[in-house]
Length: 129
Image (cartoon, helix red, strand yellow):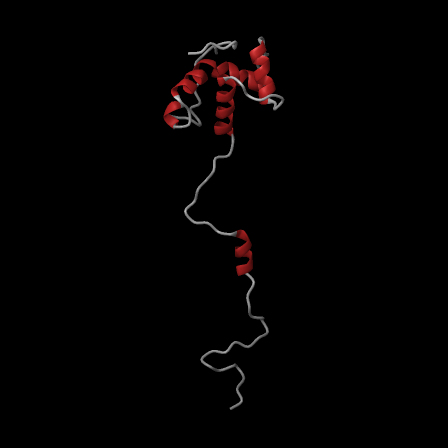
């Protein structure tokens, strides 16, 4: 595994809420990305939520990346951004049926006026007999 100038976490990092079967088994992360998250994830989580202050240049760079001031360059930064997006971003839902909202609103407009007589069985509603 590539060494990073970031402190290794004090404990292995797992997200049992979003990735119950593990990062790699979710299909979203490679085995290398899973190793990065397990070894450095605890430190990255603490840096992200502010409970740990950055000590190295790479940790400071990570803070800049997370705040949007810099682009992710290292594998560590890209993996943590990917984790953040998948764990806390909205997942797309692909339903089986789709509706076009513009057409759905138009369907509520009827072509008949409420004041018009509707003919049933050829009768117009006026009894002239």
